[in-house]
Image 1 (cartoon, rainbow, N blue to C red):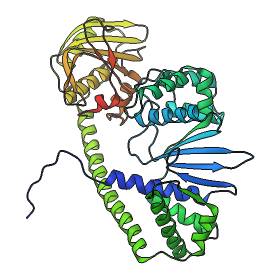
Image 2 (cartoon, rainbow, N blue to C red):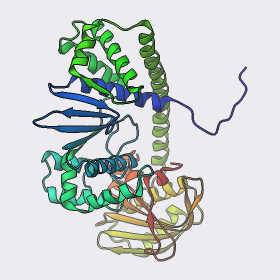
Image 3 (cartoon, one colour):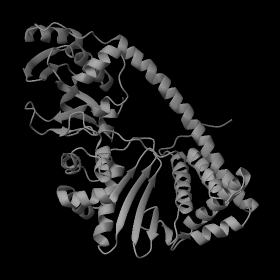
Length: 438
């Protein structure tokens, strides 16, 4: 019988094992794709550096991340990667450095995007870098707005962040950074990547059979693992690769090491898949429950403001203090008392769906008085008045489909204000704050 045991820290090694296996597999793929005159250096500039010798001397510095959460230009991991890249350029002015951020994560659209219905910042960045942007000046300005004033990542010193902000602010410097920095998102996870490595080993002629490819993969994995585990300069070359290909198989102890890591990864991956399936089922159930409670949009073009206010009060169970219209925007101030976050979200959806039928409207701003909607990262209540900006095109889609898109709340702006005036002491919430308790 196992007694209960409480710990204050999460000691699950899933994330670390997955990240390590992914880094090794990406290293193997880069090793297999080396050209003459190139070498790899590991854990030097970043996880993997590919160095090309003269006459076209170049250092490709690559950071590798296995992640489930989507990444955006305002994501802390992305900002940290950009700040480190800028620091490398400042510290090595005579070296031709290019950068790559390789991740399994998908791309997310920034919550505070400067362009209505614009592409996510990372997609804008890549379009500029590849010469695919319809208007690269406009795209660069959108990227610059997203980066300038972004919050400093916790692992980046203030001095490095200041020089990063200088680069973000200067169009010429930012354009040079965009040209040097590649976002390689949505890369295959390590189970798929391992199979791709086996394919490359066979296609290159280094392994005549799948069985031999598997043995050679194990050899290369062990060599890379042991190289990463030792101090000092860590290099891999084509001659090292051919040396491994000339050998056949690994020692039993080394094979056991590979199998242990793979087994641990597969078991943890299975656990994660099972959890994701449960979350998906619960999500579908919650979407059905939400959809059943949403009102039909108001459809009459002749509603007065008083009639609209009464309809909102009936739907939201609060008192409308202000309801105004300006151009294609509706402004609503609702006194509703203290709310749990899940209740606030449901009220926002109900009001947005209700008013999405008002002709000529594109945006709704809902303000809440005397509320405590969220709980902060340290568990403290985030107190104050709140306003939430909702795209009514999204609300119309929700009202029609009776389902809430997964990224709806990450694209919905939430602003805390310290006083009655909407422009006094306001700050925008991060996605993480808004998503707590979702």
